[in-house]
Length: 414
Ligand code: HEM
Image (tube, rainbow, N blue to C red; front, side, top):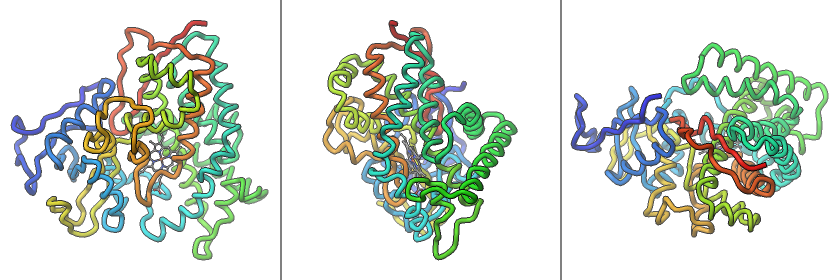
């Protein structure tokens, strides 16, 4: 694993210019793994060094917006800055995603089809299942006196809920989970052939599920795949390919993120006895705690956008085709918006304005589901395993790009 490096400012040793269009150049590589919280330290330093940076670690480079107000404005500037680039670190799309890849009216039409399954009311209907599955998984690990929290709990839980959201058997997680893990690893340097095979398996699996619903539809108000099959946009049904892309997108967007959030949350709680005690004593605080955790440990550190027409953004001259980095993690930890940003403050004023789920029309489709999943885990885990610690001597790390902890070994008394 290589260290995440930062080389910005007067010591800049790059052969090229120190500024581009008057903007300081950053060579910080945000795609590399680092020690835990390494990326936040770099992002915090760059945000305070200059309002904008031009980062030259990718062939196209990207313009970094880092302050809360700028990042929020960037998300709202969706008519001019589109998701033709979804990630500043990977500006070439690679794999199709829906609804992400759509913009404007086309995007809004597909969101209208999907939104009912992710509304607060729809998510509340999933709560009993979320509780049940969470308790089952906690009870499975509890007698062991320890586990790799990431592999044995944090990824299994959202995978099971994802399968039931699609109306698929939870038991399929046994083969589905290794596929999704292999596919995801492929985006972050894993074996590309294994990832391609996993992708084929997943698409075939979804294809069978969609065909089953075509043959035997269920209630479209309750069953998402049936709704996707029956939906009409401008009078036309969605193609089989688009339906499969939506399923694939939900998997890619929902599983790794929830797992990662759980890893960061439990690391914090293992290390901060006082915060853990409060959650044990007052489980009703779980949703507020989740919100402050999402603010403090944002794992989707950025969203990318491509500029469609020239624009002066607060003195930053942008041209058509430029790539913009909307710095979610920088914004969530911006002391101008959230004073004392490194402190976990339960009930922090304005915490709901954090940008962990983005903002504007592409704001996370699954945010209510994610919040529910995380709050349920806080309550159910601590009701059963209130005291735990991180196994000593294991160095904690985070993957770059989109943060996640590869491992979190926890132990407790049984
Ligand atoms: C803690 C967990 C999660 C985090 C931090 C997160 C974060 C985000 C962010 C930042 C975006 C905006 C990207 C952009 O503007 O380009 C997004 C979009 C999206 N998320 Fe999530 N997400 C989480 C969980 C989920 C879950 C559970 C699902 C679904 C099962 C989901 C589905 C989506 C989809 C479909 C989009 C694209 C929305 C669109 O383009 O209209 N996410 N998410």
